[in-house]
Every structure is written in C-alpha cells, then in structure tokens.
Image (cartoon, rainbow, N blue to C red):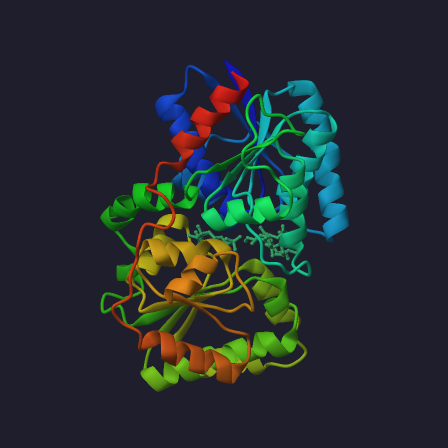
Length: 383
Ligand code: UD1
Ligand code: UDP
C-alpha cells in the first residue's frame, strides 16, 4: 500500500482531485491510501465545501485554513504547515494540481524534504511571467519527479526547458519522468455530464434558460479584475453584446471580482447592472449547475483556464479575455479566440466568434481516462 497526500486549495483543484479520488476508490483502493490536505486558499462554501459534497471528494484530513493574503504570506504559511504534516505522515509522494499558490507551496515543501512530487497538469506555459500562475508552474515542474501533461504542447514546453522526455525509470527528482496523459478535467466532464442533466431541478429551468438564449461569462484573473479600466471595459463590452443581440448574460461572480467591483470609487459597473435586466450576476455556481450552463450557452466569455477546455469538451465556443493562453490548440482550431479586455475588441471578438459555424472538435485531450493512467504510472514508480 502506498500513501499519497493530495494537496488542494482552490476551486479548480477540488474538481481535478475528484477524478483522482474516484479512480482510487474504483480501481486502486487496495493499493493506494489517499489523504487530502486542503490549504484553505478558497474557503467560502460556494468555492469549496459544495465541491467536496457534490463531487464526492473524501473530506480533508487536514485543513490549514490559510485564507486570503498576499502571495508571499499565503504561500509561506502554507509551506510551514504542509512541511509539518509531511514530516509527520511521511507519504510515498505528494500530488499537486495546476498552478496556484497551493500547488507551489506543496511542491517546495515536499521537494525540500525529499518527498517525491507528482505534478498533474505539468508543462503548460503562457510565456508571461507577470502571471503568478506561470511562476508557480515553472517552479513546481522543476522540483517534480513525475510530470503529467495534458497536451503534446506541454511536453514540448518541458523539452524546451531542458527536461529529457526519454528519461528511463527509476524516476527521481534529478531523473524526472514525463507523460502525456490527456486532461483530467475531461474525466469529470464526461462522468458528471449526465448527472448534471438528470438533476430534478436544473439551473437551466430555475433561471428560465430553456431557449439557450444566453452567454455564460466568468472573470477572475488579476490582470482583468485589479485594473479598473479593464474591469469596466469588460462590463461595457458584455452590456453592448447583450443589448445588440437581446442575449441574456449569466455571470457567476468570483469573490475576487465581487470585491474589486465593490472597491471601485465610481458606480459605472453597478449602474450597468442596474440598467440592464438581461445581465444576471449570480453567486459562484456548484459544478453540476456550472457544466449545465456551459453546455447550453450560445457562447462562453471567460479568462479562466479550466473553462476554456470545458467549453471545448461541450462543443461550445469561447472568447478568452486574455492576451495569451496555455491552451494554444484551441486557438489554432478556431473554437476559442483571444481577446484583450477593451470594449471594442470584446464586441468585435464576440461578433466574429458568434458567427462562426461548422467548427471541428477532434479529440485533443484524451479519452476521459487520465486519472486511471496517472495512478497506474504512480504505482509503477513508487509501489
Ligand atoms: C486563485 C489562483 C488562480 C486560480 C483561481 C481559481 C493563485 C495565485 N491564484 O486565484 O490561479 O485560477 O484561484 O479560482 O493561486 N476570496 C473569497 N473567498 C474565497 C476565496 C477567495 O472571498 O473562498 C476572495 C478574497 O478576497 C481573495 C480573492 O478572492 O483575496 C482572491 O483569492 P486567491 O485565492 O488569492 O486568488 P484567486 O483570484 O481566487
Ligand atoms: N466552476 C464552477 N462554478 C463556477 C465557475 C467555475 O464549478 O461558478 C468550475 C468550472 O466548471 C471549472 C473550474 O471551476 O471546472 C474552473 O475554475 P476557475 O475558473 O476558478 O479556475 P481556473 O481554471 O482558471 O484556474
């Protein structure tokens, strides 16, 4: 029996961890003992607890309750506490996901005390080190022993940074193993899609969206939320889009964005919302509701990483409110389009994507069995 500690802290990590926990329960319960460690980076019920319930993730054995703060303080507090737990638990390996401060804290804490790090969603790059996530990814990858990339592009990025993708086992931090594994978020999208449709009281019915005449919007990147001009430009853009096309806008609001709107000295965004009844700001949605919204929307506008791919899984189109993306294959295919946060460009970007039809959706991200593949490789290496 090997012991894995899964470190999670932010919303997308709960969702990714659900796929691994489910695969352990279903296929490897006699060989893998998993302990969940929640850093507490996200803590509101609708950003954390609801996902554990709905996605049947085992309750965390540890919750560090670090909460929100500046990058250094938040990461350092996590590291202090993670190190203590790792020293006590002595796991076979630590599992980390993606690129948040929780990812980085766990990677550094584990690697420094020679506990192997397994990085799921390795190799992704935006080539923009002003993004905190880019720093988190690069540092995490370079102290990992097993690196699981969802895309061929991720493998190439690792090669360019000096990783030898032909390394042979036994793998260790100075001889890391790299694998192309497909996207673990697809495992969940497939598994939960039917469950989401079968809910007795779907969000589509509750919000009276059965005609699908709506755009789904999410926003939380610091480049968009922390710059008042951009934040306002985005709201001006969606306001124009909704009025021009008589489209409803369903906008589950991330708490970071809510805080930034509340802190603005002027009321422009609040006035837009008060004067356009087509725009519905709703609280962060539970996963099953959210994927229903993704499936039924005319189009998705977002700066999220995970939502770009889910739009693709559900054969939708995505306007990405960023200058670059880690998911370059979506841009190459034309199903997603990058769009800087200026009102005119948002409206123009929307018009060109909205009017695109006959798009192709080849199998870019595997077949929805990434979790099983990852766990089998972990057992090969560590059992
Ligand atoms: C974090 C990740 C980002 C990821 C996102 C997913 C980092 C650096 N950023 O960004 O990569 O895409 O999560 O959603 O790790 N807040 C609450 N309640 C909560 C959580 C947050 O009110 O439960 C508010 C607080 O005001 C906090 C702000 O949101 O200061 C930002 O939270 P934080 O976790 O620092 O970053 P995110 O923007 O959520
Ligand atoms: N998500 C959700 N409810 C919401 C918004 C997003 O369940 O209101 C899910 C979404 O389906 C995806 C993940 O959260 O699986 C994306 O997380 P987020 O956008 O916060 O972070 P990112 O992927 O950009 O790191």
